[in-house]
Length: 339
Image 1: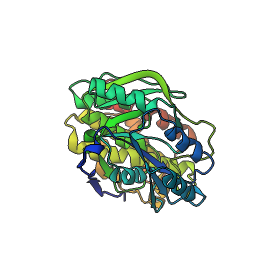
Image 2: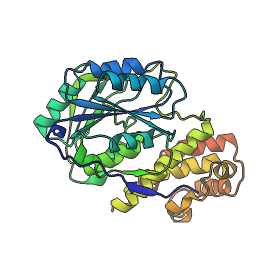
Image 3: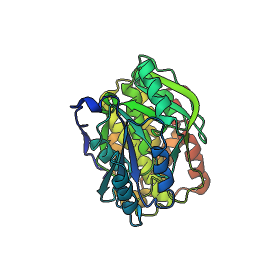
């Protein structure tokens, strides 16, 4: 059964004058000794100097711990935090709890900032008073959305994009204070869990046209990895946990039922495709308590039948599984009667 423990973490209050205008950079780190120094050197090279970097060692088994201790000793703006392995999302939560800044930035442990990342991002967020600003990156295409008064519509726009990340953004601390974190290890889609909520609680955003963030594409280490190697099945489980988490959070926040379907339905598709045996194996059997019953959804009868057979433990032929996978993308539209 999926864990149901959710909580609002509490960011330390800003008590001192020096915390104003400070940028806190949250860096979750796991077994990153190959590229970590380059990442941290890019922080040191920033033309904007009023920052702190919270280095969260998420139970690394290589020399990561030694490296972050060295940097913390070399420059007091680096804060070294060591914890047991629990995944990127909880590592970011730990970093936030140890931060003090008025603004929050995120950095993956194998990526780098351009030297003017903080300077330009900070200048733009102060100039515009936006809830968050974001920039172009050297790998992912930046999609700029104009936020509106309808919070559900804002998140729908983000849900339709392929790149919802936190690391290309500078976010007001007061927005992060409203974010809920699940007390579970999510290692795929952990950015989405934060960003969907950030978008929901934000009213304005500004995009900077400059390419200020470098995404490493040749890395053998991933910030989303834990000490366990993920099989394809495990990745499907993580997608289920991600969307189930979002469903549970937004079912309490949003009033638009079709919006709730949009978020939750993808987890249901992955849930059935995973198969009964593996759902039990990974401890997520019974996740449907979070979703409307299948019989209440306005989807084709043959799709209902396939999902019900999968739920009963029948192994569906590969071609049907592939068909379900493609239909998964359109289920939300089917539910709303648009197809």
